[in-house]
Length: 66
Length: 66
DNA sequence: TAAAAAAGCAATATATATATTGCATAATGT
DNA sequence: ACATTATGCAATATATATATTGCTTTTTTA
Image 1 (tube, each protein chain N blue to C red):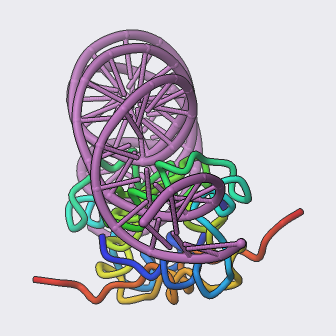
Image 2: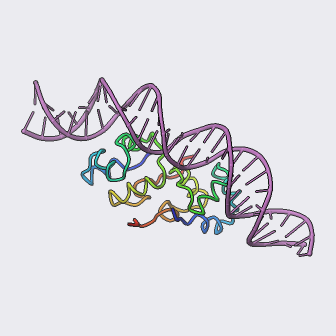
Image 3: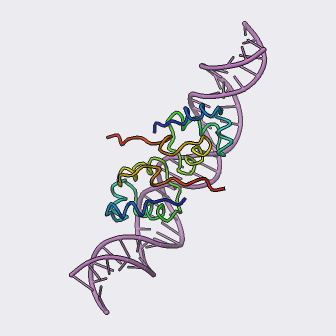
């Protein structure tokens, strides 16, 4: 579940709390997603994309690992 | 929750059941996702992408609706 | 046009994403 | 150094994604 949320958040100059508020979840949820310990829903992924102006592929794409 | 899963699945010449088997969920889950009545997890979205050789953006991107 | 296959759909059960609270640790600024 | 802010993390609670079963309706094909 690796992703680029943390990098994109920092580039957007947002704290975890600020991003959480923007997308309507708690700070913990953002923290766990950044750490790769959560499997977020598509809706939340999209909201994070909108919040930091990136696409799904930019933030969440992973080549298929065997 | 509109998406392009149904189109991509048909282009890949797969039934709902075959796609479900490929990605390890039930036919119902695929059906509801195609109908836009589910909010799938990122992991499942990625597995669907791999199964039909498309990207997240191709299958699941939606412009932010206000 | 009838049989077979595919898809829709409803109800209930289960697994897990997310919330909540609280505290510990790390980072940042003064 | 100290105060402040940001982040990590654990435990429990809740909401919801997904499974399961079974039946109906639609689509495909012979």
